[in-house]
Length: 141
Image 1 (cartoon, one colour):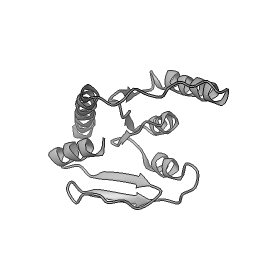
Image 2 (cartoon, rainbow, N blue to C red; image 1 turned 180 degrees about the horizontal axis):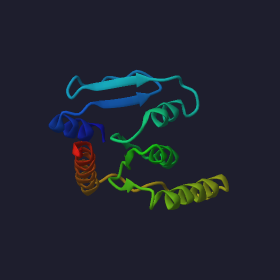
Image 3 (spheres, rainbow, N blue to C red; image 1 turned 30 degrees about the vertical axis):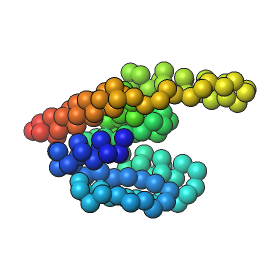
């Protein structure tokens, strides 16, 4: 989803921060900051959750990171275009835990379906809505 995020960020003049455990190439436009953190368990998640707050948009497939960022007041968008909210995060965490227990018991779930063009379109629409919602809040006196 990075190319889509870059396109939307460039359109609105937004800065993008990528957080990873190792260096990677990033585009110069839009402004993209790459933060390389220790390779420790959840180091990138910890960095993001500690700094996320109101007026930030976090894009992640990690349900536990999403919950932590919501607690800090950030908007959170899943990589499928479905926003995580205070109303749905409890169910998402419970589903994640159930699937983790099933995998631990040897049940194969098959994983998520392949990413389709309609998923990309849904993600772009949701990303655009999230950016506009944050901008409206920022514009309030």
